[in-house]
Length: 138
Image 1 (cartoon, rainbow, N blue to C red):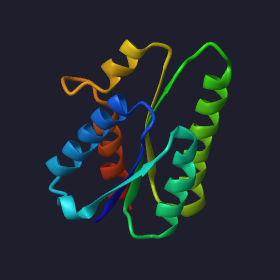
Image 2 (tube, helix red, strand yellow):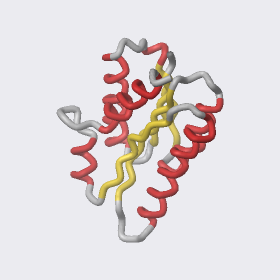
Image 3 (cartoon, one colour):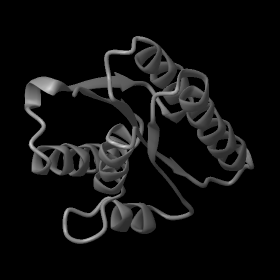
Image 4 (cartoon, rainbow, N blue to C red):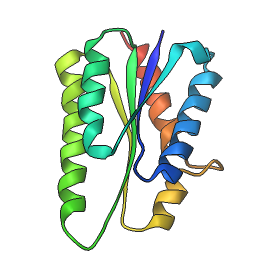
């Protein structure tokens, strides 16, 4: 089985940690690095389109989306988060390929860092675990 990880470059300090957690989780299940494809996109808004393309290729057992959306002083945070989550869900529904979500939405930087921590909670690892489970739930 091959797995695709689509990763936002925006807030890369967080997304790189999430990516490391996801890869570590897949490797713990015996997935070879040759069976893990990482695709970088500019930001969270681009994640659903890339996830849909990867899922439509039918080359991957699951797609893992990784991003970080932080609240600012405008309502853009809410709109961006909603569009991203709905787009990722739609990519999975339209293709039948599991698309899991490690897109952190946080009001503060320190909250995002906790959710991407190498020690303890890492949403990237959790999304990879979900992808692994869904890939085997046929």
